[in-house]
Length: 196
Image (cartoon, rainbow, N blue to C red; front, side, top):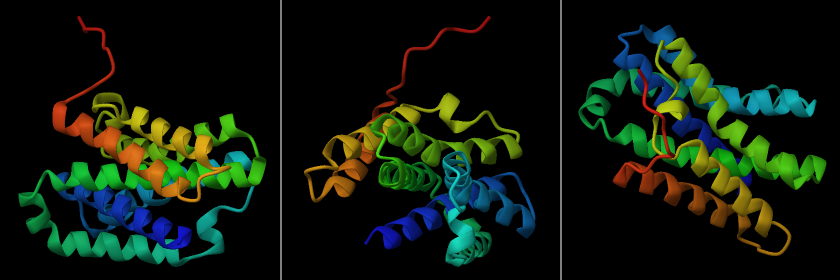
């Protein structure tokens, strides 16, 4: 079940990246580049830090899924643009899946709970940061409602339950999604300081 969930997360995050490309008026290559960043960027950074083979070099299905998502979004961008709220919810789903799967992989490899939580957050948010920087936007993680916080909640929930809860993955995903959904629905955010 985990590989399937991982593939779904890659597809969803790839779509969010491709939507940003569409909003910026990019060509099909831009769609592919911005789809790749959130889809595989965070996991790539995680694997490099952990000094293990980068996941998509071991299973190129991740790249094909990203390409399919990019082309699908390119063709159907007009429809997706009219349903603009979909990006927030797709991104919330991808964030929830990646935060938990990143934590799960790290915990399995290292047995270190703290590192697992950190790498769960990195897996979920780092690729999106790269996407936004390339698109010349302020990264979503720095301007959005409880974004990295939601990833943290999902990863932490998984790590706390992993030893004894069979459904720890699903509970962690649900926790991250609910926290992010509350942020979207009610505009919840961490405290901020006003600028000059």
